[in-house]
Every structure is written in C-alpha cells, then in structure tokens.
Image 1 (cartoon, one colour):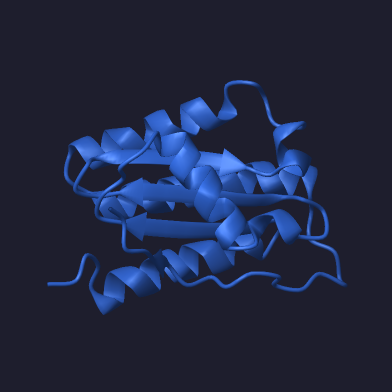
Image 2 (spheres, rainbow, N blue to C red):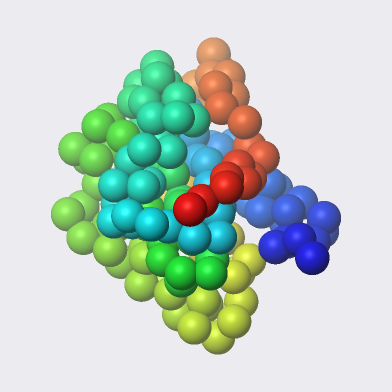
Length: 144
C-alpha cells in the first residue's frame, strides 16, 4: 500500500503550488520509510541531491520525513535561513507535529508548507519573471 493516496499527493502538490504562487521560493517534500542517520544530516543530503541549493536566490525549503522511524526535519537554504526568525524552523516543526501526533500526516505536511510559504512570501515575494525552478512532486526515496 502506498504511503499517500493519489488524492493526498494532489492535496500536497496543490498546497506547494499555492504557497509558491506568492513567492519566488521553492518548497519540496522528501519522504522515505527509514532514516539510518541523524535526521538533519539526512535532510541536508537530500537537499543537495534534489538540487535545492541551486535556486537563483538560495531560497529553497525541504520538508523531509522518515515515516517508519517517525523522524522529520524542515531545512532551508542560506538565502532564507539568514532572514527568518531564529525559532521559525522549530516552531514550524511543532505545528506539524501536533497533526502528526493525531495521525494526520497529510495535514501536518500541508501545515508545514503553508507556514513556510508565508515566510517565503514575506522575504521573497513573487516577481513577474519568477519560474518554478524545482518540481512540486513529492520525492519518494529508498531509505536504509
């Protein structure tokens, strides 16, 4: 059985599209079953593998989840990290975690996307010349 139904994947994709519709920033979701290392190290590894560090304004954000291990991280690139409040990533994780604890993985992810989109919009508003630099599809990985 797949982790997300087609409808749930569509909901997540639409949340990314909506968030990115008002910013030049990029948001990606990366999911795997297990994470055999420190969650932030794993997220940083995928951040690079997914070319998130190659956006023009260095304003990509990755939401990484290892579902079986119940680990997740939210990380941003240098451009956004130097602008958001110091507690932003942690407060975003807490907002997501409240949904995860009640068994609603999709709603937690969408909450993370929405909160991230608000910050990206504040610091990197949409410009007429903006283009979608990265895929909005969920990246499913094979963790070990």
